[in-house]
Image (cartoon, rainbow, N blue to C red; front, side, top):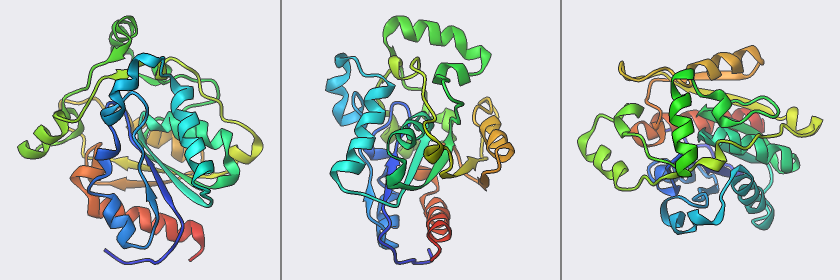
Length: 246
């Protein structure tokens, strides 16, 4: 991987049923390239799953990432959100745009102002959404859905995925002020989609292009940080270098 020395921090936000563990292969590569890296676990998930009964919603996740930027005194942040975390990074940008340099949507939801994650689900998932809302949690999907074919890695992921709080899917997100809306946003489209899996995030890549964002195709599955960390790290470092003018 090409080494680029910089002090601009990455904040990596995982998707549904994940945790800081999903960045285990990627974070060291970004640090080796000279970047500070923060990869928190969202409340109610993974090592923080014991906090799930506390009424966790989208505001919970947005607030804790925004607060991380403030309390760690981070600025010029490259904020990366995978999957569900497209909702989170959008909300964070509305809260603290002055601390961000750019947002990277890694195969993630791209919501409009006032939309909920469930509004962005394909019609065939609506019945599932109703059941999940009744249960209060969404059960983790099988890693095969995300293009994970290595048996050892698949088992490792399954052992770490936890139920996801449904209230995070049913709360609308705000795009915020003119300052937050004007932030540079980039979309990374993971194009290695299993034949048995619907193309859920392809429409968001198309939406990003229509909005004038830079869109990069990455020949990897939805969990590219685990299945193609070197290629993803190279791409993120290039994005950081471009947006930093270095």
